[in-house]
Image (cartoon, rainbow, N blue to C red; front, side):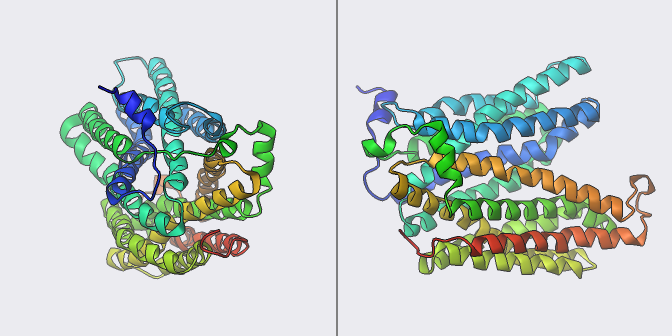
Length: 441
């Protein structure tokens, strides 16, 4: 009888993936987004409000988390491209990283009884393990996408289940987690979500993550200096990664502005912000299928330009509503654009990687996804700067509660509509400069 390791070593994808393989591969989007959204949405609240860790220390820890995550992306990507094993370049990383990732995520919410200093150390150590494992697993899954799906047609179809799973993970991570920790407590929530993530990652790993036989010349290790030189000299990658940064910043600013918008502009209950976010995410799911059809009939560049334009025009609608219902209807239009961005950006990056392989003779998915992850992390910084500048300039004062000056409403609407439109316009210009005009090379 052959062992699991032997079966993984011997299997290789020779033709187009089957529908079952595509769905299994796409299932990885659910646990990765579930963990990412739950962590980003609730970890500060948990440690500050529930465990009484000083907010300043948590902020320092989160800055360290952001720096580590950003630096790890290009480093892990470059190492992954250079790795040579009988099991392939990506599979060993993913297989070895899944359990540490899920365990670290679970332990974030299950600290032992410690004094404040001990909790800070626990947070730093456990989150560092979580960061390393998350980058190792998710970056290598992303690097498999252009390898498993080789044409625009295959990529457009293959990315649909992955993005639908990802959106469902986002929804559960932001809306389901509070219900779980309210009913089961934080440790109970952690165990339930950890179990769900482990099961889905295992299904995806064994059912859909299959490498191809890369030609020997294409799999030779490239020197570190050449890695960076070829990546940043790529005429297609530079406008792509800048456009992606501006798009991610637009979305991050909107997500940060929604709670302020609901409370201080619409004068509604804070919980109704879930209706605005729900309108975006629910609409994004069917729109992913729509944009898949568009890119199969046009090209990645054309489809991305249209989706960015739809997104930019739609966000401007947030200037007008005075009710949650009106803002939710705007969210429906925004969701159409968001669905396109989720579906198309990785399809475009896969095309860049194909073009690079033609030019250099090397398959360097890890390097490109790693550098992209590093640059896009800048959206978190830009979002924080925008929020701080706008709220301060508009006269926002948290001690006033709901009795904010009228200028705050205008500032919040500016932050939710006009500023994202500005970043979106910059993104559209970058993608317009994208030089690959065809659907396939």
